[in-house]
Image (cartoon, rainbow, N blue to C red; front, top):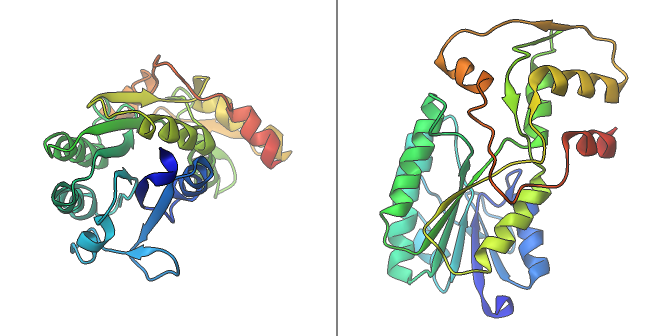
Length: 252
């Protein structure tokens, strides 16, 4: 029963963690949010050094592992997860759910390779596990568009294909998965629509009432080609229900 189950959430203060913690609390779990910086009511532990991990996992039935560092993926994601699963194995954790990224086995990118290596650490841990590969969040797509429009026009590879998903939908999916026994499977999860980057950009500008032009450029390289070819999209079911336009309507 969820009310008797303690769930450790790493990366609890991050974008997804901020949605997952209240979602699991609403479900009745005893949620133990983890942070590197002291915070009232939270457990303090550091994946990069291992400090505090033994205490963090004590008495925990399920770990929802969200913590990640794109700037230091080897130290935080790969080696940090190795430290976490070692502590979790000793503590007798029953289910380890790791949130990865959709399409990382199809898009050549250094950070994605680190995520694949982290998945391998989880699978080899001996702990019953579930790996959930989530698509890019709606918020992340907007952050990209904002960054690409700093000079005025929105400069994009308009043929990129993305299947962005609502953070709330991912939090709901996590709640569903930890309510079941671990399967050891790797599953993908994305939003209900595949949109080109041009469609994302133009609908974003329209929602904001912006007249900025959209300038298109075909980006070189294998990574850009893979994304144009739909490597980060998926036909996996179930999918999220909140569309990109739902996100824009709610925000603007």
